[in-house]
Image (cartoon, rainbow, N blue to C red; front, side, top):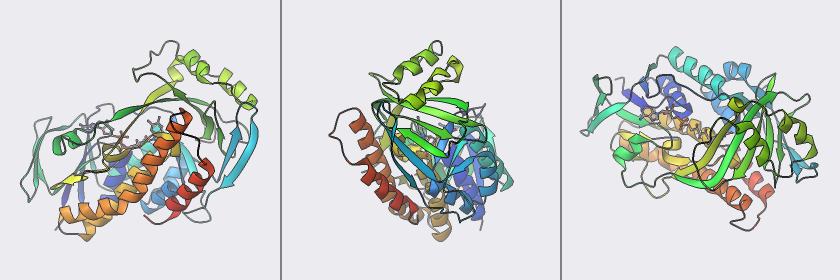
Length: 373
Ligand SMILES: Cc1cc2nc3c(=O)[nH]c(=O)nc-3n(C[C@H](O)[C@H](O)[C@H](O)COP(=O)(O)OP(=O)(O)OC[C@H]3O[C@@H](n4cnc5c(N)ncnc54)[C@H](O)[C@@H]3O)c2cc1C
């Protein structure tokens, strides 16, 4: 018998869950609160485990046609800009595919949204959950547009401020501001940019290729609060955050001139480390259950892997609760590693904890992410 799944949230986690669940034969409806379904246009780093996941979802060629694939990461140190090290990561999707990719978030949404619809998922925009009643055999949901339906289970993929989480686990940890912001700006692709270039402290910046013609520059800064930044003056504010930048960053910083092109976001985090990830027939995935700071560039990767594992476990287990418990057990160690170590890097950058060996952590993370999910 076909089972009906409601996914709350049409972000990266919700869309990949829809594709994965459709491939396992579930009927899937996504509801997305934002009627415009807006995503900002800067890029996202997607590492080898995500490229592998895109192959598993059956979208790899469409995805790479809009992305910029690469194998290497190069680290430059301090204000001198001297090269410290360069390393390559394995090609997990096969020798004919790049290890990693950078892609504009808008392009990623198009690829995943098209694939979810082509797979047969329904996506309804401007709609959210009004009420949800789980009677043990199914979940009755009344939506904000007044329609009612019954589902076998509900997936809360509604992001760091998840209302699904608040509904099922009101005492779960709340998101907290970490003390840092990330500033991003799209620029023309630098000729010869062969992968990610990271400029370690004090600037904490990087260049990431995201298409054949674009890259983005990111900067991490320490800020007293997480208020929203006015658009006016944003370009100058971003340039001012680059403390003692390496010489090779200077021309790119000078090209940050359009206030509207700056995407600045406070880094917030939440992790249900000691709580369940489901109650009854309602389960959480992605940032709703483990929003990571971006220092290991794996937040979306963890949401995408969640989606694949959740779909596999729902297909394997007749009882949703058993599937959800198996899903959490399979995901916990990887997610915990990403969330806690990303926070450690941020804390070290802010001088809150003593310096530690980032190279060793990177090696450990690559080994873990290259392993099976
Ligand atoms: C500055 C920054 C940089 C990052 N860089 C990277 C990176 O390079 N690589 C990486 O892997 N990750 C990165 N991340 C993390 C990544 O963006 C998130 O982990 C990822 O977007 C999580 O996906 P999600 O689907 O769980 O949540 P979201 O992307 O937040 O999607 C949630 C969706 O649910 C919708 N929604 C919310 N509430 C409701 C509701 N009540 N009803 C219906 N819909 C609702 C929202 O509108 C949204 O569309 C970064 C994060 C930040 C903050």
